[in-house]
Length: 334
Image 1: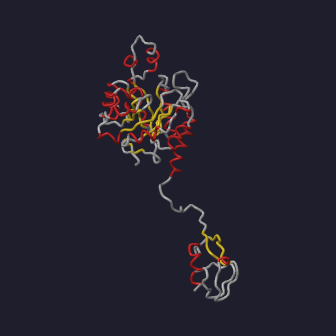
Image 2: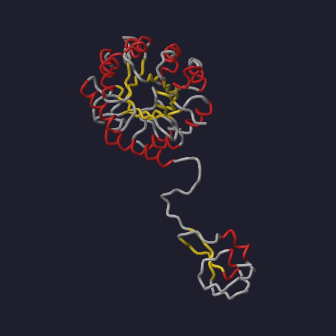
Image 3: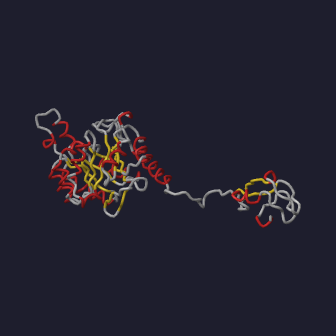
């Protein structure tokens, strides 16, 4: 059973319509002009959404910790939220954001964020998941560095009324993720364990192959870090993809969906149709019995006597002279 993920009036699902999220994260480098360029690059590539991270260093780690100053430099200004939301709506691309503290959920709701993304570390922050799930905004939950028990605990925070607006992502919290650690089969595993929710993939590997492979095995959502320049300074630039790679990734995902087609088998109008019809290999005289060796199964552009009738006419006698190579008909025999 395919599970659909609803955002506004749109539905996303495996093999049919993939939700592609360009993860900008902190790669805007606190430069709003760069932020706008990244959003426009995602839009041009055909992405459905862009995603940011809204955290405060002092709400994540103690001020005297080694990480504090590092995280402080990466903070997204709350004043940007309104501007980002407005810019995204102007350019018709969904605005997604990861809140890392409770008040951030209310701020995102105030400025009409389209998707709340729960980052992998916050899958253990059950009050945050509960508040996000009751906000009315679609929620996507990443599962990196978590156990099945923790994933199921997170699921319990979601009211049933919000199931159609909730999804989970397979994720490996390794930057970049080694190929041998991708474990894409977890997409199927999570789909079995979380039966009512679509499953996607948050890709931290180098390049675009893992994302395309994930779509081919059923991922309904792809989240991928993007940057304008991999050489830029910052923790997420080096494993992100640049605009030309993003264009290629979205193109290949869309082409896969087009090629996947429907669950049926029928002759298509665009196919070169060749028929196999029976004809005789030699001239037959009237009242002569026809033998197996007298029949050729030839390619024809129009359907003649189908090979399924082969046994029906063997040993029957011709009603008239039948010239060599003629298209046979049941009416020729008695």
